[in-house]
Structures are given as C-alpha cells and as structure tokens.
Length: 162
Image (cartoon, rainbow, N blue to C red; front, side):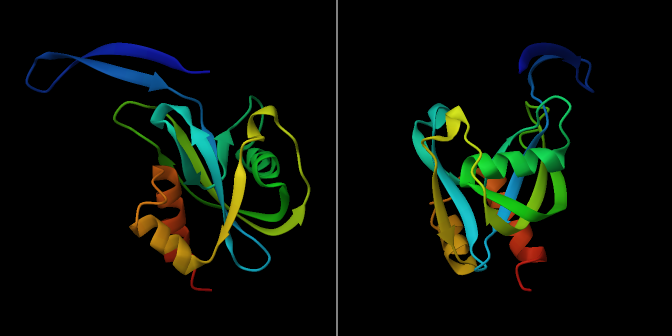
C-alpha cells in the first residue's frame, strides 16, 4: 500500500516549499545466477512507462515477511526457481527525491526448479544472459530499469569476476 502526501517544508533560506512524497514499503531485488553461470532477467510490461522492460526479479515484502523470505517467494513466482543460496548484497533507495522505498538487493544462486504461481506473473518471460551480454544490454539501452542497472553493475563489479 502506498501513501502520497504533499509536505510543506522550510528551506534553508526560509521559504516554504511543497514536497511530494510517495511512502512506499520496503522491497527486494534479486540478481539471479543460474547453475550455468548466466544471469536471469525478466521481461514484463510496465504500465507507467507503456512498454515491456527487462529487469532483475523484484517485488514487495509482505507484512511479517523477512527480506530473505521475500526474495525466495518473488524468485519462485517470477522465474520458477527456488534458490538454495541467498546472499544480501546491499540496500538502496530507489528514488529518494520523492519516494521512501528502500530496496534490499540480494544474490540468488544454486537454483532448483520450483514454480510458485502468482496471478500477476503470467505475462513474465525469463531471459538468460551471460555477463558480457548484460553489460551490452545496459550500454545499448535494452535494460533501462534503474534497480536492475544498479543491481547488475553492483554484482558484476563486486562478485562477477569469480
């Protein structure tokens, strides 16, 4: 559930400003490496931008759910795999200029097929890509989602060379 508000804040020079704020719950994003060493991306339609985007799996954390449990659920729903190993990489704000959403970035590895069906995931297509292909897709604009770019580059910079 989101809440949208307009806050009136006083700037350092003493003027009042209106600041739009979207209060959004915490979420998870998952860099997923399959057993062949390829990265998994999901292609899905995003209504606000009117097009399909390539993204890393991601989703909200349900009430009472830990981020690690959310990772496992989201990955099963979106890709049909259950990860045996989940590692927290970092956390970051998705759009701190207007949103409170904090994204927890994880790495999922050692995958086992295990589909968990969710009603909003029927239109998702899973794409496999090697590290060089992912870098090309970021560079040429095929991957345009901010959390995906941040997550993939973070992974490739810090873990991708092993």
